[in-house]
Length: 330
Image 1 (cartoon, rainbow, N blue to C red):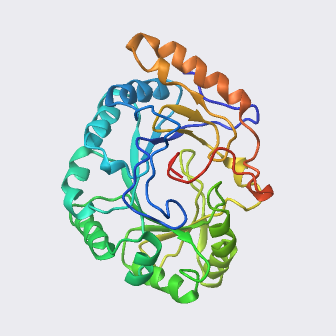
Image 2 (image 1 turned 90 degrees about the horizontal axis):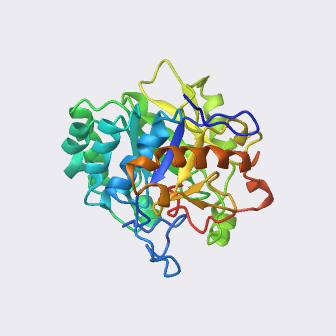
């Protein structure tokens, strides 16, 4: 089997596939003014059939994990059909999603029945008012209720993400609240260091705080670093024998962050992005129209890996094509 490999020896078993740019939240670090349609790009989002062909081609390139992202992926009416075609027809071993969880309590049964292998839920604070201030939605109780329902249905792979924001969720009190939350909960919680985007420079300057403040907290409280598998994401995970859950840190400004990169991104309109903050994207959608285009598709994707850079160069202030995090799933 042909494997995706770049000129630096990195392999790519993991794809983040955005299926929509639309999101119904207004998170300050992503879409503070809500979703605004890009009038310069009139292409529709990838269809169910195109996604099925894409997943099949990726599986034949050694990809074993696809994360469905957005925007908010569950706003698509055919969301569970998309999950089904990836799970049943492509050879992909793990299909997972990232969601804001806004109707998690309503679709928990469908999530379990769909065969999804994991779910990441964005919850930036356990404080209801802080959550509302960050997302512009007072939905925290419903989201937590949805998580409880998933657990009652014995859904195992649940993770929670929070963007670390200065003065909003970065105190020891915040860290202790999450520590208490995962004490008896088999849930992974990860802080993500705020990243600068093209539209978000002012927000970044105001709210960025290094992820080190959380790793210092973990080290002080006897959390132990854990090594993960080849298809794992960028989180550095920590375990503690006294806790059922785990902590994680995603620190894109840390030294050698890109050294272990194992993922590529595909936008909701069918552009391959080699990096979240890359300067270029190439459309692969024209090779998703017929089943007999599979070899051409695989060849094009494999050749693009020659152009993947060694680093995202975020530390130099480069943000590439990334206007906001909704366009390629963050």
